[in-house]
Amino acid sequence: MEFLEGPFNFGQNKFTMSLRLITAIAILSSCSGLFLQYSSNPPTGHTGAPGEPTCARSGCHEGGSFTGNPEIAGLPDTLIGGQEYEVRFISRSGSALRTGFQLTVLDDGFSSVGTLSEIPFEKVDIIRDDITRRTYARHASALFYDAKGEASWKFKFKAPASVYNDSLTIYFACMLANANGDPSGDNPIVSKKTYRFKSTVNDEKISGSSFEIALKYEGGTLVFPDDVSSRVRRIQIANATGNIVYSNMGLNVNPFPLKSLLPGLYYVSFHVDGRLYQRAIYHQ
Image 1 (cartoon, rainbow, N blue to C red):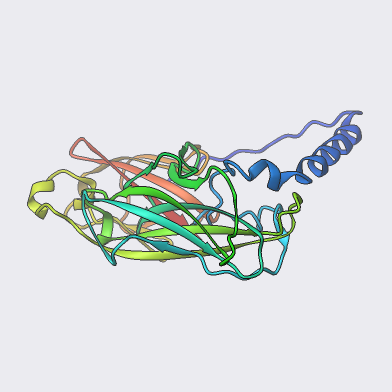
Image 2 (image 1 turned 135 degrees about the vertical axis):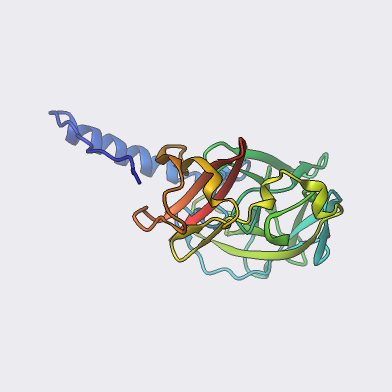
């Protein structure tokens, strides 16, 4: 097992104090208008899903005490593979004035699944983040609550043809804001909803798919099925920024320990009989 790591050397010069002062001023100046800036197209990767922070934990929107009841409507408890649904994200609050949202759909391996798509004039933006490797639906325009204390956006979700472990989860963050243009006094609500999944194809018809290899992650170790462990080749593990933290030409031991990794989101790729398989894991 070879983990790639090395020392970091940080240079110092006579401008260090000046640069710190300039940086501090820049941060304070930019944060003062964050809600106005992110009232359209907020930064991705802030749903509270495994490996992600929220706007509050990022030190931006905080200090608020608003309560609310966000809801995902339009999806049945059991999703059918390949079927497209019209989804409505509803934000309800009797105290906040303005609201926004962001969500992502993940399988039990924390990989992005399904297809999110926009509906014209619904003020929803769909975007893929190259760092988290996840797709997000987010407000293209923050909304004011109506007289009933409700605001909503619509978009479409097409369920994947098959999914790891026959379930998927929508992780979402809903911003509750005071609408004064300042990030202080706002707060998000973070939640998730899990759906059962039913594939429309028989298991024998998806030969060669990554779902045939039930790679498990438990107790800080990767567990490969006994019938394929001897054929695993070219294992690589990358962190959330894409840097390779482990690489090996084969599997030396099964279960495979990962306890020396720092907590966070990682992507495991490996080959079996020349075919590439990938899996996202969240190491705690």
